[in-house]
Amino acid sequence: MGYVFTCSIDDGHPSDVRLADLLGRYALPATFYFPVANIEGAPVMPEAQMRAIARDFEVGSHTLDHCFLSRLGQREAAFQIARGKQALEQILGQAVQGFCYPGGAYRSGHLALVRDAGFAYARTTHNLFLGAGRDRYEMPTTCQFYPHRRDVYLRNFVRGGHWLERLPGLAIAVRQQDWQRRLYLLLDAAQRRGGVFHLWMHALDIDRLQAWPQLSDFLAYAASCTPKSARLSNGELAQRSFSL
Image (tube, rainbow, N blue to C red; front, side):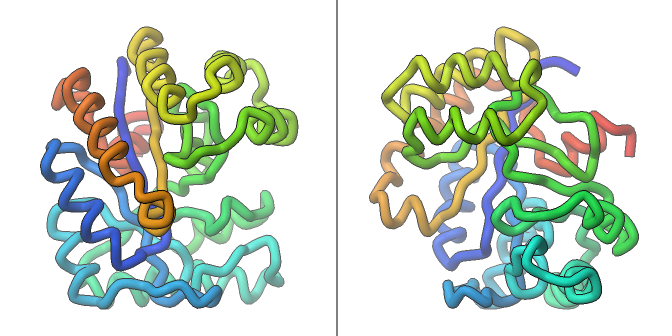
């Protein structure tokens, strides 16, 4: 398949509009995962802003109420998955093909619920991957735009399995203490390997970190070294990787 850059943004925070503008400046596609509401109390953008983003970017579902599926019974989990898709499609006036597990919290049985709800693929928060993964309902990521410490990556690596696939990414993550420099090195590694660099983030984190200039610099770098043919949404990556 060759090197691919993809990006995803979770939670539908109102600052996603600023992220969409920034991504558009560098002609980088992305996938935004929207809940319709957020049970944790964080704001979710108005429906008109959702539709505006959907005109230029892929939009996926993040359950109806941003519920961590691992905390729900099977019936409630099925409702959150299926109703989240239906409600978002009604808001956008278009089909929604992608799903993202809130908080990366799910059980193996939830994959079938996502499939049965009519989603074509689903994204996790599994990190340190430099490829598209093995299952279209468990698509992994490379790293989050967030200042995680090296010990966090080590713990995630031990718990997350797929150790041989993730070992090259781990080696970079723990060798580099500067979290922003780590992003650049992981992107460079994905290019060298002809693999996938999957960046994910929350706009609220960027607000809190006041990291908009640093994100802009990184996206500019990604655009400078990523051919337009290698810039894919999550859905396009799933289609190319799993022949949807």
